[in-house]
Image 1 (tube, rainbow, N blue to C red):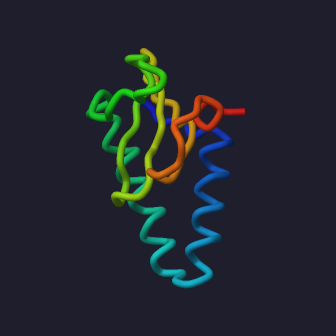
Image 2: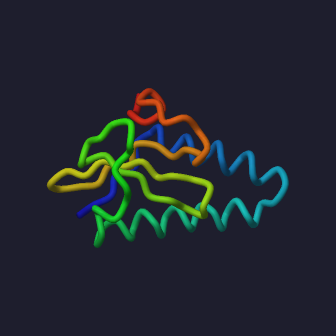
Length: 100
């Protein structure tokens, strides 16, 4: 299975990195590595994430990264689409989940 990062998910990671790197550049780079490792984990365990509660769709799931962030992804037959990244305290609103 391959991993495809949406433009929205890439932009969200850049925003998070920019924000964290103002205080600690090393921490922001370490967080990017954690996002990458968790996404790679999905290749072998695509259903390991929790179903996004508000969507109640078996194919759209969320996986925790570093206790503060969620990778929101969609599973299809041939790939895993990383839809977005969000802070765990963000409201679960479909407009925050589905890519632009």
